[in-house]
Amino acid sequence: DRYASQCQSTLARFAEFVQKLNPKADEIAHVTRTVARSFMEAEEKRGVTAKTWNDVLKLLRATFMHLLPAGAINPFSDMPTRETETVFRIPFTPEELKAIMDAARDDEFIRPILVTGICTAMRRGDCCLLEWPDVDMERRFITVKTAKTGQTVSIPIFPMLYDELEELAGPGHGKGKKRDGYVFPDQA
Image 1: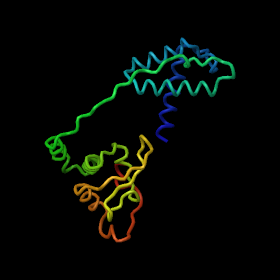
Image 2: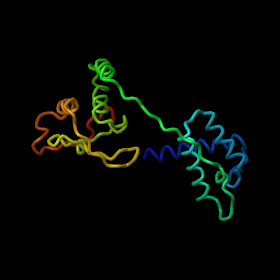
Image 3: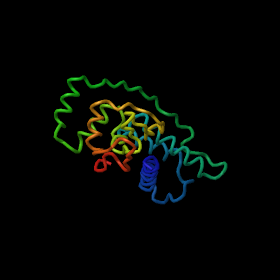
Image 4: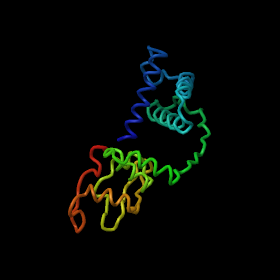
């Protein structure tokens, strides 16, 4: 759903761009290579990363490939993708993690998400959308399909996260009793 929404947003932004550039353009065949290049230059001016730029280009290239009549020239076909950089992130130090957790200690909304993220390395969205059926308190594992890659991963539940989940699960959470819904419904 999220990916489809992003694609729709990109296509709407493109259609709006074309309409501003040429109000008479009402068919896909009216999009020229010049218009296509101008849109991609506008994307660059928006400050998008090389990866996002490439994603937009690939979406528009594929869209035109499927929608243009046979034999028509795809205005995005000759545009090369951008070189992307690998980003190496430096993990938080124990002192930084302590400072973060101290600052969030009394915040019932964000603290559980921070604990989940710190203990699982899951992305914020995956933490917020964690569901009880994916949490095995007895075996102390979380098994989820990640939003970004779509891969199913099994993650051990560390003690700090176990304590947080145990408090949320309430009495009798183990011993065969299953919960439904989001672990963090307000955050979801």
